[in-house]
Image (cartoon, rainbow over all chains, first blue to last red; front, top):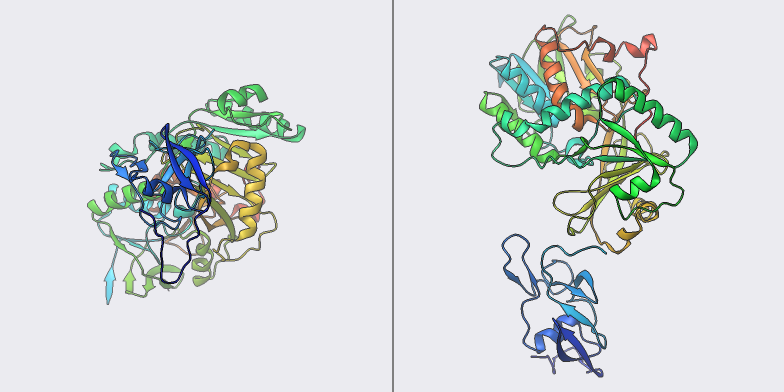
Length: 101
Length: 382
């Protein structure tokens, strides 16, 4: 699902790009967030909760809550709701707290 | 409303809670603890949560060594239902010039005399302990594996709950407005919740203990000084020991939760009650910590805060009776290391207040040392 029409805002679709979600090749558009591209591809679970290992997805969607932290290009704790999608990005479900390299 | 008590403890930080617990444990029936805000709302709850034995003066070495022994079994002693998050993964103190190397070796000599298991480590051994440390400018350091971390909120809560089970009454959001005297002797405490008549009062109010002293005409050499700390987002366990550099005036540890807690001492800080945090701190902290631990540059900062050191001229705490005011005792002026020595201080103060012989003499830690000039100038503080 993508918002194509909005009463106030304009959503101009950028160029089509490829990215990877847990190794699986998906399509998205430049200009949208990683979270938006995943959502449009039907991906709802973004990380696992730390103690009970339950799925976590979008919650605040404005970069505040830590619910959507994922591994992006090997970097943990990326807030995918505010990080823009780029060609060839490797996006992975984050398990645990993330390793600092 | 007027009530009576056998003793009143002023201050709901860890020192106050530990003292109240020990007074009740020794059989005092009616102990009241008065706290202006909430428990651990002052320096205790704002501290860096480190506990270490590696100090440069005998009082600090002894008090911290024996406190760490108590921390090791504190949950059992206080029948605490939760964890105080005590973890002994060591403190690594870093030396960046020859003068520091010399001072550290002097400290090691003292520490070894007092059975503290610290040792000298070369820069390469520093890297074995903390693999992500930068060797730039590093001359080596000292390490003690018995040092570590404890959660100040949990430890204070543990003491407070144990004290309450022994009958201690804790009044939070209650401010002491005056100390009452009968001639010179303490006769009571005037608070926003009424007067408490008591022959025994101890001030454990951090920097505010200076104000308590003034209520009975005593000038205590204790000054507030703001220190700031920040905490990062949590990541998987990466750093065992707390690292500390007196050259940069900083310390940094990864707490059990996974966040990195780090703080900085600013030599130009104004001596005031300001507890705000500043963007200047964030910038300076980030610059200094990424010099020592470059890998931390990718971490997001979650929160920052300020708190007050209660500084004395020799950066060593004032413990004991105030001779001019019979019945008035002080445990304050901890100069940034009150949390880690609180378990022993609580025991000692309870002994002294009840006229018993403490397990070691504490006369020399009293306020009179500033008149006699027999000071304990602590070199190892941030």
